[in-house]
Image (cartoon, rainbow, N blue to C red; front, side, top):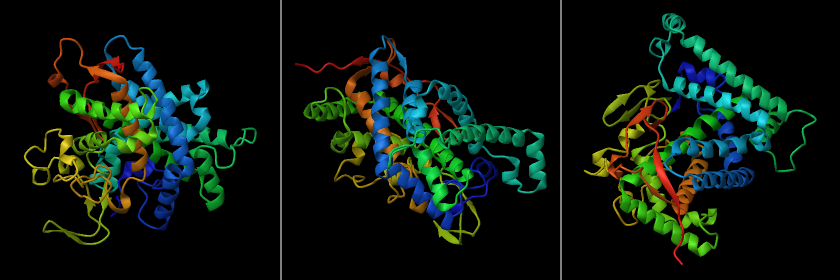
Length: 412
């Protein structure tokens, strides 16, 4: 399927120059390969793990200093934001002057996410009448303001990275912007191509990771047995590595139950409830229905993950054990091979940042579960943890997740 011709993403992706919204073809293949190589190649992997350690260390310190209930949403968002921001912008991310501009960027970014998830008159009536309605109700003006604000921020970032007086990164070093600027010179891309890829990185990388972590913690608090099983597994692995209460990257492959928790969370709470709109390239038959070429297709990942025909009568229940090896769903994964679980899409349009996002979730969640005992606030029962959903592009919790962390002290 090709990227669909909806209006808002076209503007915010710089005329469909982003990986997510560019039409299928040679340009999309090249940009996807370059984007993925910078995120999961040797340089990207090293930069990401350094950023994860730094941000998770800050999270653990903040939680350790808490003296009562903590609203986790802001803490978890800062971790995901810090990882992506450090990988994209390098050392400038932590500068005070940059932080002030970046705070404004975050606000505009979320406005852009809301707009990307909503429909406009022109989507339903792609003609002059639809465009006129959008102008009259202010949709066009809002879209242009968001675009100008995002573009202005990215322009400042590029000017900083192209400043001749800026210290040059060592060979193989630098950040994502450095790499993209180099690719512009090598492949003849414009600054709009760089900005479009940065939109991909931030729209797809921050909110999705933090939302998944918060839903996982919500589900675990309502299932004390699952919470205990996950913590015991993690602490057993950490006890062997000799690093106190901190999970290391090398520990993650051993954490089978944690991976089942993440998988079950993604089943019930996919980061994008509706995958990005696509358009059929040719006529196809799906479930006995003929779908003509050029048809806009919306895939409901949320409904697919809760389908009783695939998951059984307990499809609405949080049961990580359903993914145990040897069980009915033991081999089901979310990397595009099993159509009953597609939180990141599938096929050639599957999310190119999947590996990075999953690593962010697993590493952060593992350290939170290892380093602390978790409880609901006094006077509240575990089953009273709200699971109400809200949002558009991503379904996040309607209310903040407030929990009480107590530093874990291993028994002698």
